[in-house]
Image 1 (spheres, rainbow, N blue to C red):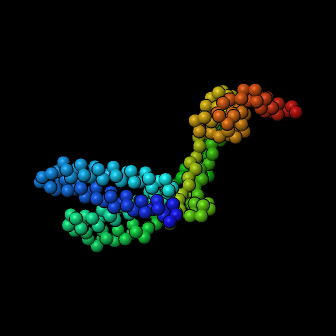
Image 2 (image 1 turned 60 degrees about the vertical axis):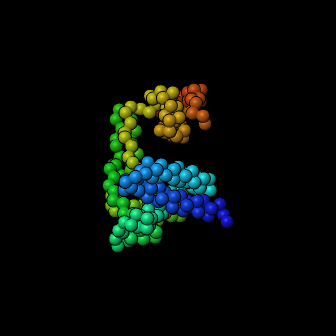
Image 3 (image 1 turned 30 degrees about the horizontal axis):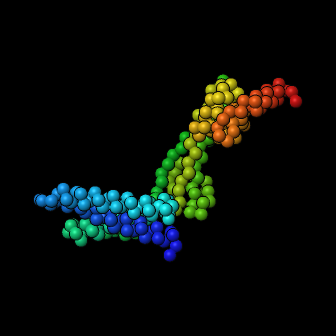
Length: 227
């Protein structure tokens, strides 16, 4: 048995345990006596569910584990009818069927700044234009329209790059230590810091003041017509 198969089995057990926990909590509301016992039992089952689920994550990726855990919805419906004698209609069973076979997702979207980017002022650069892509289950990217409706199948997703604001003032006037802080906080990359702000930041996010001064002097020289 592969590690992935074992992890999926653990998640299926989790789903059944979670369904039982839900039944116990419902019993605590319906039972005229021993309500505390039902609540305690439900809480214990939830703790067991968390422990088993954490163990399953050792063997499968979260992107696999979480979708598989949706089977708990099915477990709750089945256990509710069996142990609580609840009535489950045809439409609800149809919903259970859709969970089991998977469904498509319809995404409707609009996007500002896809054609005309925000303009910079007082020497600031223009912002980046927005861009949308549909990523198929093989990881291939496909362009989509500026606004519209896209149907996603299992394993597909929409990737959206939102438009950026225009700059205020020349990028070279931004203090190097502030640019380095932006890199450390993840707002811009090291490459962007060097190409746009002419600031050199090492792999640890520390400012290289000497290299920054050289890089900025080169830009000034080019702007002045020097070598």
